[in-house]
Image 1 (spheres, rainbow, N blue to C red):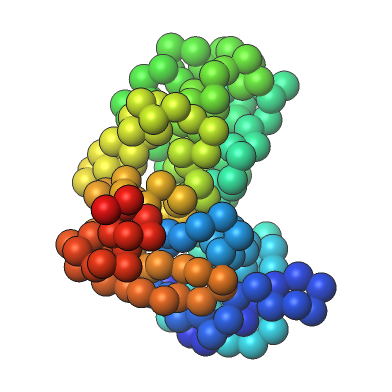
Image 2: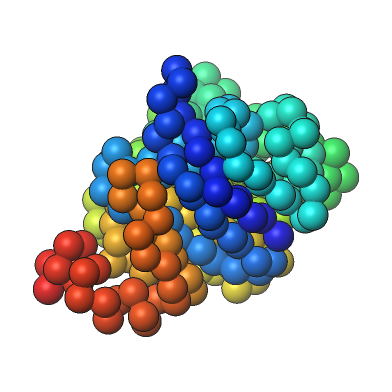
Length: 235
């Protein structure tokens, strides 16, 4: 579905990502884990078109993504839930979801998607008339994910959804993501510092350090790798 091959990308002529090769198959839940500053958010910005690679290729559903503008990538089925939530604070929950549904597919499937969103996140239905800026951090994260789902994506890019949340609320967010993955045909790609949780929920993962993939494999193989156990799992 999504394939990055030998991608170099960064800011101001300085590459942050180096020779990056990552792939997500249809229906997969894939995590990219690593320390702060590893290049995880840069990876998502490159996929969504906010950063143009200096070299390499990106394909989505067999199409050259680098030939598609950032504004049009959402219409192909790529939804990016950014780091830090970034909800529209002065708009209601319902209005935020309407903003997410601006894609052609989002408009076409609006009522069906809204029903699914409210089923996954009942608190958003209960408070749909409440201003997003008055929500708790966890509720804002739920809204950010729901806004991405409103676009009717084929793949949902989730940038550090646990950031700034208590462990209990972060676990609840992860449980909702598992529910979404099991009960939809949406592929999920997650970048996350909470390595233990990411490896628990994702079926496959890449380990990113200093802009390079140093390890990859399914959740069991990575959890059993001594390097992961010592560096990230405290074992």
